[in-house]
Image (tube, rainbow, N blue to C red; front, side, top):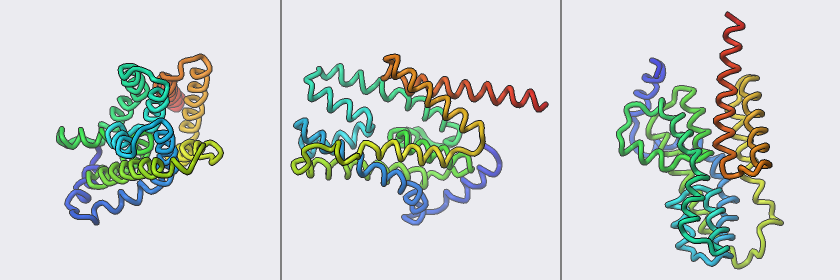
Length: 245
């Protein structure tokens, strides 16, 4: 952590009360806007599957992983055994290991309890926001937890509301809610792109993921594409540095 980052963290940490959380709540608003329709769609599907409103909300509270929850509900509806559901969702969420490892340098000085709570609420979307924050030297704990808690609360609320509305919505596909999540990812990616190399790596990773999906490695496509993209980006960056020296 650089000197500027340490000073930024020291300035932000003494703040107390709700005012310290407000910047984090504001930064989480784009995530909330994406979570509301997608979480509602999950709630509707959970209702169709036979889960109660309490079970739906509890799943969003404890699992808190959109893709894994949608897969789990589909497997539950198909009568798959619990072990298969747990193993599948574990594999789908393996990418979180890479994301939290990437954020680790910005979490120096945090206690184990704080690290555990923070990591529990890291998703693809909050990871993107935290990556941008840490790159700017913004490592305040209050803001970080505010982002996570706001996004998590929105997901649980949307799931519960979607379940309540499930009886009145026979099919969510005509509503086009499935587009909300990709649109949110595109917006978050745009916020992180700063140069041509970032665009190149993003395009390479997306192409790799599509190739892997077509090859049948859909469960591992994201994590493998992420590793391949990071390796590709590091190699290109090293080559560019050698050329300029």
